[in-house]
Length: 418
Image (cartoon, rainbow, N blue to C red; front, side, top):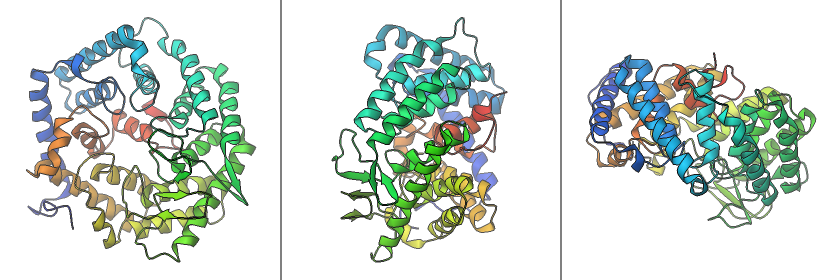
């Protein structure tokens, strides 16, 4: 396979490769923490200390080594110092700011990981709500850096803070106002910095896919179900329109990464992609989740796309050559696991095992493509710690990672809550 010179070497079973990968990660992380200055690590959930705390707790869970619990506590203390001393500089995004940090605290509190003297989350609820509403009014639906990440956190918090329910409904009102309707479909224009305002993104990290999943999450939570149901159906229709258009395009991808102007209208940008963040596989997963709610053939449509996407050799042209969750092999594996959990087919389980094998082999190799993941070993999104947790067979923190990447919609308990 192009981009994986190390795939298939050694002839190891998947289980043995996974053990080898875990051993390498274990040794590397111990060496890293000998001289680690936590104050020099960014604060964010996806790219810094907040996510690294969860990783270190995962290491404690699987090794029973108190050293990792001690390091997790040190990382958390450093994070709290950063919040108290530089709160105005942290920002509010899910990926790198206060929303993601609050989600981390929500997980820690739910699992009694550490003791907190006061309900710190209630202090942040109003601030995150105001920011999420502002981003929604602007039409910034981005999961990592916009209102989708905010509403994800607030939907989880509403179980403990009922006062958030009417505020979430206000955010859903703003989403409805930002929607672009055409016929029986609906879309949202990308209004995050770095994207043109006439572009519709289709993926999960920055596009329509996360919006679809979060409408599903809101529906399953019992919030404004009639409106959520209507929006789910109309977003699914948008993806159906893209599939019809793809039939006339000479493209190995089912869905374009972006579409300019109106929903199924001009200039789709097809780039073959098999990744968690963007591409056919994550869209297939979202269609399957939506199909469980709206019925009809939507679920089977998602299954068909997933089955074909995970097998198509044309995807070698994407040259996925990292082990990252974002754009990398572990993200493909995590998404395939979520799909295979919903649709118990041999093809999907074999595909998931294959990408687990590819990820483990990447960690154990000397391939230069893998080096950046070790350089950013504290990052769930772009580092080896995210890949390592993905390879875990289960556990509280493995399930938490699935939830954080929207790969656990419709399943309970969330965050491994006791």
